[in-house]
Amino acid sequence: MKLMVMKNYDEISKACAGMISELVKKNSEAILGLATGSTPIGTYKELIRMHKEEGLDFSKIKSFNLDEYVGLGGDHPNSYRYFMDHELFNHINIIKDNTNVPNGKANNLEEFCKEYDEKIDRAGGVDIQILGIGSNGHIAFNEPSSELSVGTFVVSLTESTIEDNKRFFESIDDVPKKAITMGIGTIMKAKKIILLANGKSKANAIKRIVEDRKLTTEIPASLLLLHPDVTFIVDEEAYGK
Ligand code: F6R
Image (cartoon, rainbow, N blue to C red):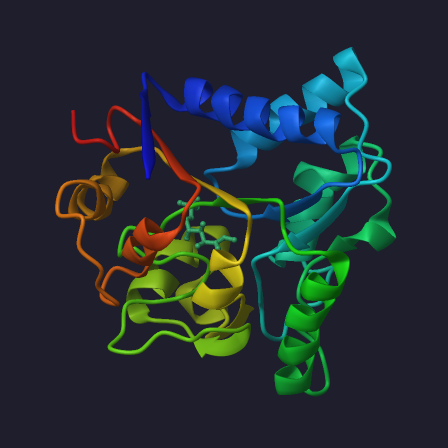
């Protein structure tokens, strides 16, 4: 595992966008694994700037997102499809049909999950996966538990995650209780993984992974220690400085 500790959020965003743009320039048909949440917004802003000012070309890029709330359609302002369209896709020249966000309104959710993994495999696998981390150590919606899933699956969200995410909804009762999420195995298949973390609330999870260097399903992100090419880019606060 490679660790990069940067001064602040702006720096982690630029470092991450720099790594993505390097890949996109080298491989115009690269497959990006993307995350939602507040952490990658700065990265997406920087990619948009690179597209507008430097002509970074996404016309042949494909993407797969980590997760989506069950029950929310793409036109719902709290859906992750809506987030991706508004925070990134609408502002770069990626072809919408080449972007994949799990369908939270699929008729058969189990079947959808199986097909999502197959679609990623058929596309050739994710070249670079961007991850945020929950304050409880979750990645995507793989929550702390005695067991973790391998492939994409339907998960019941924990109280802690519902609490973390309620800021995006009018009330806690509006936060969906289930989501579709890539499993740990799906994430681990990416050729390269970048985990971003900023702010004090992430310091405990980061410390337990970076210092203890132990694998535990109670901190799902600790499983990333097994990946051959993973970089944690964290700011000083998330590093506990
Ligand atoms: C989002 C996702 C989540 C977030 C995590 C951190 O697609 O999979 O695991 O990365 O909850 O969220 P923020 O960035 O809002 O702190």
